[in-house]
Length: 144
Image (cartoon, rainbow, N blue to C red; front, side, top):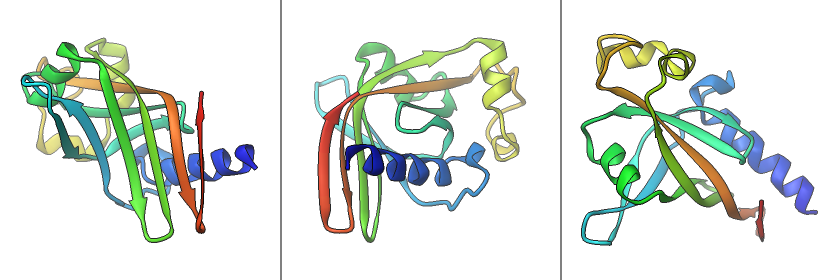
């Protein structure tokens, strides 16, 4: 049953990332720890994913999401809608590699950045350590 749940969760994540080919625009939240040690949440669009293993987001280097990720790499990502909740807990890193930035770039970012080589553009890579999945009235939890 765990493998089936994980496969279904991976499909949910894929459909909700720009690079997944079927982007549904469903809300995704990213939770980080702020400067006072409190959790904060942001709604943002995931750019790519590998199932529930890792998810990337594109953001500004000088915004709170990147600064908080550098200060504390603990994070949580949640995809939720009627009938499901994919809650992932793990670690996040800020990536400024030009190759990765170009790989994660998508057209909708043009309104926020001067291009894939914009020095204020970075990629946040979230790597899952544990999960809690709820679908069709059942839930499971586990460690990756």
